[in-house]
Amino acid sequence: MRSNRDAIRAAQDSPSGTAHAVPPVTPAAPDGPNAQAVAEGVHPAAEAATREPAVTRLPCPPPHRLEGCAHADALSPAERYGELFVRVQASGIFADSKTFPDCLPLAPPEEILDRYRRQRDLPGFALEAFVAEHFARSTVPDSHYVSNRDESLREHIDSLWPVLTRDPIDHPPWCSLLPLPHPYVVPGGRFGELYYWDSYFTMLGLEASGRHDLVRAMADNFAYLLDSYGLVPNGTRSYYLSRSQPPVFTLMTELFEAQGLEPPHAYLPHLRAEHAFWMDGAERLSPGTAHRRVVRLPDGSLLNRYWDDHARPREESFLEDVVTAHRGDRPAHLVFRDLRAAAESGWDFSSRWLDASDSGTPASLSTIRTTAILPIDLNALLWHAETRLATLCERAGDAAGAARYAAMAHARREAVERHLWHPELGAFVDYDWHRGARRQCLTAATVMPLFVGLASDHQAAAIGAALRTRLLAEGGLATTCVRSGEQWDQPNGWAPLQWLAIQGLRRHGDEALAHEIADRWLSTVAGLYRREYKLVEKYRLRRKGCHALGGGGGEYPLQDGFGWTNGVVAMLLQHYPEHPAAGTRAGVGANGS
Image (cartoon, rainbow, N blue to C red; front, side, top):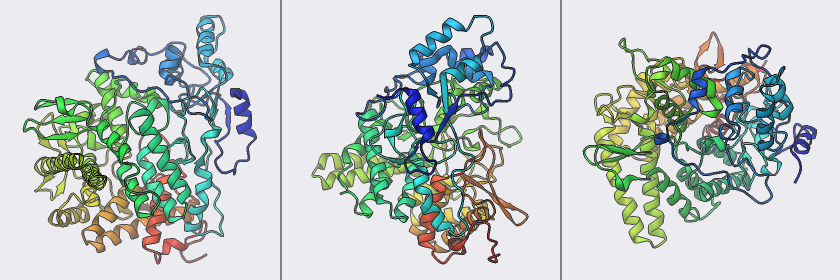
């Protein structure tokens, strides 16, 4: 096996434009605002944050080993490096908290920690120098791609797929990156690993671009993750193994079937495994109790919530989480759990998970209560999974399994109707099971029941009216009605929500509103591409003058690349080939100049 230094050197020597190449790495030099004057002490809150109450902690699977692929560390970075991890993350050496957990160790991790413990109290010890000597970091490019002015937006997307594709054979050893058997597409920017729900929307674009090879490879990667870990993790890093993301593998299998890539029953065992993960503990619950991701309401209904099996700061957002918990008045481990659970939702972060202040405006992030909320999109996806499982079991001759999943889907549908439909709003909403009340905020998550077929035509008509009057913005469909400073709120719009809304509305015959959202969204994306030569993670839905803008808010700068934006735009251009965005070119004005 190659040494880490050899792997790093090989990565640095590879051509930047080579397909499947891992981004080059550089020594882990400091880049944070305090890099020249790192504090010698560590804030007590940061040190205490790693001492997770035993009652809140559940075991997570270790990284799996795969022949032909470098082994990941058996422990996550926080577990492996202990006090070194805390000191680095609390020091301000790196501006982005995700940098250190993603760093590549230049020696076996046990040796690095042993050297740190022997050297840390010596005169003249410098933490930043020690980190630079023992770790290298993956370089996040300023821009993943330089646009060719001769290419249209559609052609540009096709040419992005090789740039965003990674091959696990190039994974360096001993780091947090999980092994996979096949190539995969990453979102871009700081997100250099495979992500779960992002990938469904990316796969739409791969299909539109005729990249059936990558769609099949990614499907098999997700099947491998379910076989290896019993879940699809948030992303393919060891520190993500305690949580998943919205369960879209069922949607992926429908995509495979529609394209003739795989017979419908091929992934039945994996669909069963994922459903079992989300329903773990359900059979033992009495009314008014919860276990992990399942809640049994006082009326006996079973619904699901987002969760994480750890109650400590996220390793990739360590300092941010410590600061958030310190600002609140709740026990820190409860805040950490809810921050992690929101990360499982994919909506990290949003007023959707926060309490409201006395004035009705969003309260601070420290009031986050994700685990107290039963989300409409999650429960719609699980209803869809249960109906799909019932159908596939019936086709496979498993009558008992078909009956079981059909009964679960029927019960879930009744519970959703009873608790998550808000007749006054004319929309589906989330449910606060701690307080026994529906949440009053309208969010774009209300479109998921339309997309999967859970909503009735009457409900779809009401939702369409609510979207048009409250969430339809100049540049597309807004995420919520609230301005909180969080990225999953006003004024941002996100590609996956546009797709779910457009397809959900079309499913129920509202072609006019679907076309209106698609037109506004494509115009937004094309406007930014024309001016800045790129596609980005999220967009501001209100223009500044005549210019489209990338979105803001959240814990990190705007990322470009960008997997799910590319995928949704490619598929929308296939549905609306006459839209002016199809011919948009970088640097060329709307009038062709």
